[in-house]
Image (cartoon, rainbow, N blue to C red; front, side, top):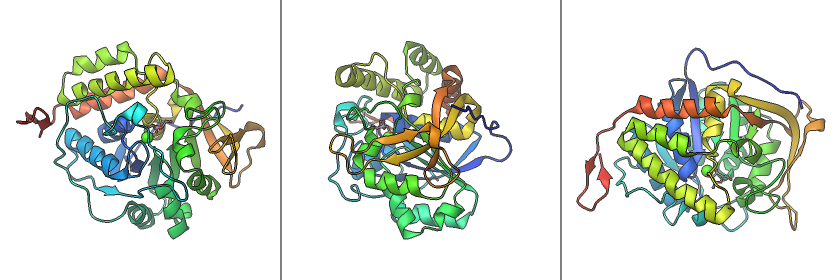
Length: 335
Ligand code: BDR
Ligand code: CA
């Protein structure tokens, strides 16, 4: 494999549109994007995945409330995959999609409109400037490509959390985000744009251990306590549903790559998404020996500088600091 290192983020903040399905690890992705000076978070769009889209949208609004993101639009998107029935992941994220912490009443409300239009309009309005980060099933992104193929030439780059080159987590072959909507993933992987895939081989290196919990504890803000409670739930879920000691925090890896690509090794590959398989539906079939320059070429994350990654996330939480909240009469917290 050829290791490819890009330069660390310098200059003006990168404009990022984050398409997500919060989700415990999506919550960390939003936090990292919100708390990094290297990123200007221009919009959050939501999709059905870890939970139904009404819940993932509400959860995005909860995160914006905790992060003090009053002006970042949250726009709801597709209610289900292009063709298949929706599969959610309550075994990892609970019935709400964000189980664990005491409930937070969102003070941020969704912005009217549809995520697909928001993606198209945002990308076309700023040619060459928008980085699209997707951390859920790729339904919205595929629909945006179908609605306006010109976004492929107008986007700066696309970074996804999804797929794997060695193993799946829903089936032996398929990772959740790709498994849920393989047809959408295929559209995204075949589009003529610069695509980076942070799959399980990479994200399983981003484990949340007691060390990170202690670092968050030391910050001592409402946000850090919320994130700890999320991770305690996620840890138990991963232990019982996946037999893993410490949970991998997948989604912020895609955001971290935009902030500082030097924390990652990536290798070029040709990737095809299996959409017909009886046993391997949703598999990202990855051939590192066949990376060409054209469609199907993907930069695939292989190695993570784990300490550097957690330093980025922890600094983002520190930078956000205390966002004023008060205890609600029902026992939750509200700003
Ligand atoms: C992916 O699936 C979801 O459950 C997580 O949020 C992450 O995006 C990991 O397979
Ligand atoms: Ca996700």
